[in-house]
Amino acid sequence: MSTTAHSAFVRAPRTAILTSTDLCFRQRVRDALTDLRWQVMEASGGAETLACMERAPAETVVLDSWLPDLEIREFIAEFRRLHPEVDLILADASDAPEGTARGPRRNEVLLALRRAQGEGAAGMTGPESGLHGLGTLERRGPADESALPARATGADRPPMPVLLSPLPEFVGSHPAMLEVSRRIRLAAPRKTTVLIEGPTGSGKELVARALHRLSPRAKNKLVALNCAAIPETLLEAELFGHARGAFTGAVQGRTGRIEAAHGGTLFLDEIGEMPLALQAKLLRFLEAGELQRIGENDPVRVDVRIVAATHRPLAKLAAEGGFRADLYYRLAVFAIHTPPLAKHMEDLEALTWHFLNRLSAESPARALTERAMGRLREYSWPGNVRELEHVLERAWILAEDRPRIDAGEIELDELQ
Image (cartoon, rainbow, N blue to C red; front, side):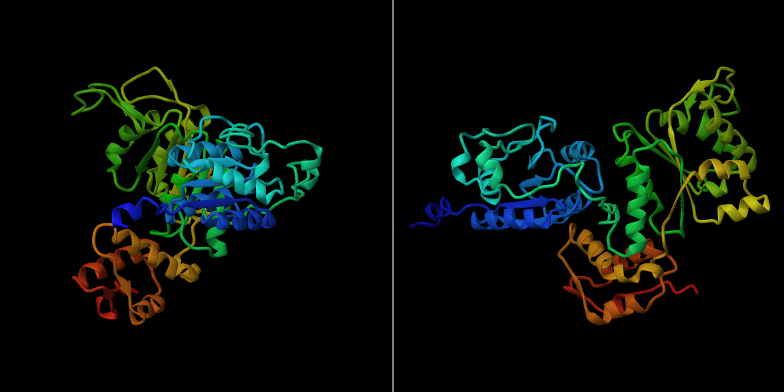
């Protein structure tokens, strides 16, 4: 038989992700899919499923109707936005939204689900039979129902901890980072103002992006402004906007960052650097929801969620008069602390491979020798995760065309 003819009989790899907190259910479905020569990954929640998709894209996701970390409909909407081509099959709900992709091997997965639930192939009556919404399995009478494994309903489920897995924005599983993900999930659905505190390079902007992505405002803009990067004389106009001719050089009117974020999220990075006079104007906006462009008299009503970040001890600054205390309390309704890398060094290896994998997208993959990894472990990382990323990029360049990065290529910025 020719190679071309033989290849017609070789089936492409098939991969599915099973998402459920029910370990027994996952095992039964995994065994049934494995018998059909599927590759299977497992996840206990929505965030872990999204992380799996980033590491190894799947053709199908079998999704429980209840997730411990994300509301099911919000997860489905987010998953469809990120992976519209992937087939979602909801295992045990009848009211899921319509509109998901229909994968070419959907019937195989449905067959595996029926086998796992004790129904067998005889229950299948056609390509779309028994599908409600995203693919719920139709039960075939009381006898079949009694053969099903017991599955808890939403009302019967025991309370589950939210602290299960990191969000896709974060790498590693140290409890300190899991707590960051937990607090993001709790705050994201609300309009509550969030203050992100942590050292430079620890991922504060990633927290802001995750808050926006998981919020009902995700369809609108996330607008970012670094308060330390803009001169004090221009910061007010940048934030609130201005009318034409409002000041020298204002040859035309301009919408400010607050107004540009209407309906979405405004991320104020390095809020601790904002001048005191401008802090008073920001406080008025937070209290009234209205702003005045420079050079205009009419107020403009804006609906925006404020997320602020700082590497400075804002409570201490407020106590000493270096930051308005009333604004601090307005911003710190809900606080999220990003830990320094030195506090979660157990994640160092996972972070290292994450950045090396990202670099390999543009050039041949490289690995670290054990000596190089030892250098990374011995360092205190004052610049945190951002410094690690830059050190690895520098080492990648210094390794030239060699497949392995050795200790000699690890150049550290030892400032302490």
